[in-house]
Image (cartoon, rainbow, N blue to C red; front, side, top):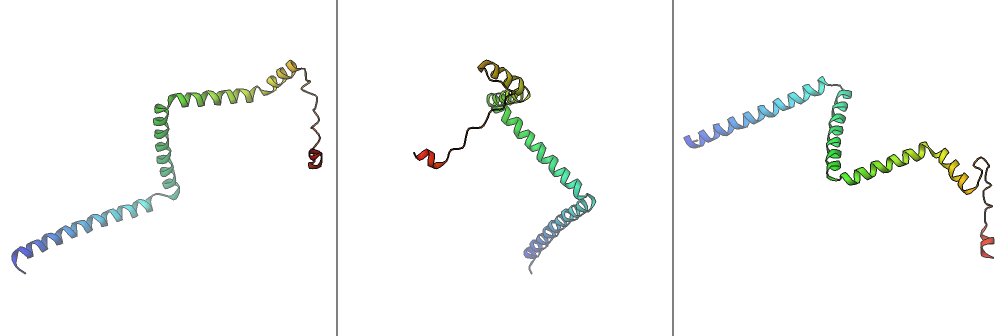
Length: 118
């Protein structure tokens, strides 16, 4: 080989060897990291990263849609309040319309198809 080709060949070889060493260092690092950390620790780290990402997205959504978030929180509060105070509310409504809340109501009789046709 002539001098310019030989020089180019040696430069390419040096570049290839440097890239191979870099890849080998990455592989060794990953193997060492994999062996050093337990499965539970890797799962915990991945779950933590996902939770952090989800919290960031939720925060961005809440900032962009504050009215919808406020409405949702208010509706959730109403549902919780109605659930907690359902017995007193039922008693009050039954008193207003004149029904005894303690008295069991008989279910309506079932209707058959033949009765509906006639």
